[in-house]
Image (cartoon, rainbow, N blue to C red; front, side):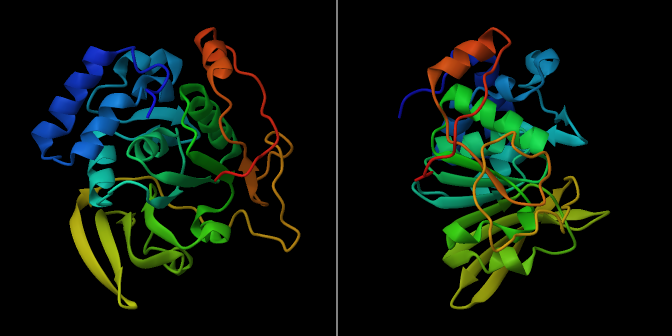
Length: 266
């Protein structure tokens, strides 16, 4: 697997982050540790906050959303028990950092984000670093991505009273869902689908933004559209897969070009 573009920057800070925010806090999965070490987290932060990207805290990315703290990204990724090659549904793209970590861990990632500006920003950054095994959709994450179900793993980065049934229905047999559940007080849950039933584990307290549902309702005539064609998430909109080095060079200069039409993500 080729190194992500931009990974040569902040290397020392990233090594320190992996040591203090992952290893020293109990993360042991080599696949997760390697992904954290190889993903350029600073590129997913706002430019003014890039130098703080490898600290122990979450960072704002706009629209009331955050780039999750490194430990929580590591904890949730490890909880998925990845072996490589899994098809993962991520609900809540946000900055795109969690998707990049999952991709670096060897997964095919299908990520849904309800806020168009964040989805488009994440797509550009994923494009810039060369994360080719991530596709992004603008829409209601609680509806999942049924066209590509069943998924081996599902990860929610926003919390509600319960994990939506529509998402659990898209989990394959033997699959795992990891999600924050609760409103005022949240717990991180791991749900395994076994023999038609569920086995639920509580992994500890957490704090995530609320899971917003009821947007991105599907239509029978739903089709993929080029990014930028609509500003509304009421109709799912698939953003294109990465293009490569040209956009990374543009990002380094503070520029990023437009999108090209969607292609088959697989």
